[in-house]
Image (cartoon, rainbow, N blue to C red; front, side, top):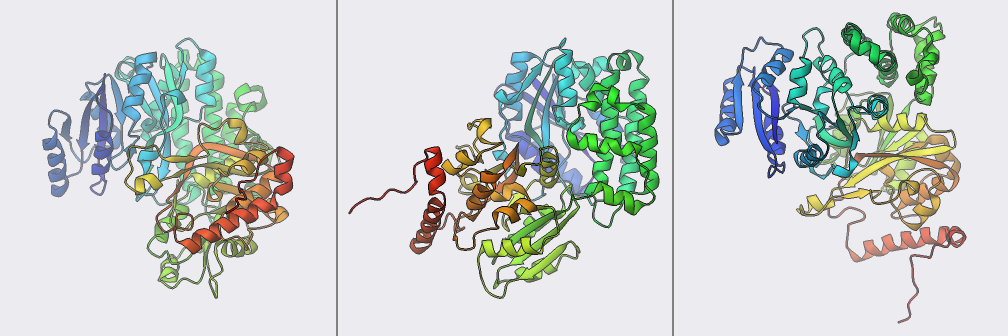
Length: 594
């Protein structure tokens, strides 16, 4: 099997070396690979770099130099013409593909012969360097047979796989048979390329694991302009699909549902996720209403729209509402949607910048951000005050009190309906806030928090690359122990990283904030109190990256430090004596005689 990788090179600042490095990491023992770099960047240094890449592996890498006046769509289409592989993969220069992608895809293709292999995408800070640890497994794939329409609908409507052109391996014969190409009619060229192939592919294999890492660097423009652009893009795609009668007649309800989801629902979610001072124009909303009701005047008669989640159905109800002002619309859209992010920091001026930027670059921009400095003696204050974003609120403790005290200061000052903690030396994925909020909005009211998988990168930081990364909670753990009423399971074993969670502020106030008497494991204690009273939701996505570096609170091996950690565990153990008895869970501590 041969995979052709097409990389359009249009910006000289792109870190193409990173993309090549991740392609080189692939297991190519059973997969042949060719890399086609279509270069539209007329820069001498860029040309020297690309020539060097081509010279290092001339049998694998081909540079196609083109006129820099070509559009990106034309560049991608030209790249496909040079492909000789069985499957085609598109990569933005500077992005990364999962190191296991080729090997796993080869196994899946050998077993099922799909025309489309789909995977999910993660969004990361440009300095995130641990994508190698993301899981990507054969047993995570679902296969849709060519004649399984129910399975195809599930893939299209419920799988969560994006129609972004970067999220798929395409059979070259499928592309040639369908004749689909990237279009200059829309700026976001993926919209008219991938989705028709998702409808027409004979056999699809897909997984929710991250096969692609998109390194985000863009600045967000005003939300009304972005939404207007997306409206035009989705309208172009819809017109193309309805202009193909044999396709639209077979998938009418599904295509209508997709259009409403992307044209109306996704745009409203963009509006409520925008910065606090960035409001959706009332005129734009009224166009959304008009077009949506023109397509589906009775949306409840479309099973796929009607079966959308609770949050989506609530947004659909706005179709019948009249708003007198942008402020009235904004208030309704964002009601109880503000997230308070808290970073407690101490002497981490060399690490905190990237952690802060992971929050500032979130796809969910409607937040306030407290950075609580626990009386640092370094340049932490200068670093934080160097950001001019008015959502950042800097608080400095007069003396060092510890992480629990600092997080509680943030909670006490918060105005948000939800609380998220971000450690000062970790990374989180740039859609973490959005995905976790979306999860909790669709859960019953008795749920007090949601949390995602976190990846502990300790082993890779220590140079251990022959062992898998530590994922919390473990994927071997049953789903039943990860969501719902999980208090007994969590009491038995700590598997939730507090920074991986999004907590309802009301629930935190109800059970009590962080215990300031605990030297460590204060996050476990708080999660125990929440899960004892509330149910919790779980996202099977690694959205938080835990950099447990040497010398950190838990890894510090100094004698007195370890003694204080053990004392905290003992204190937590004593807090839940009656609960342990109730569920038959033995204490973690044993009394031994000398």
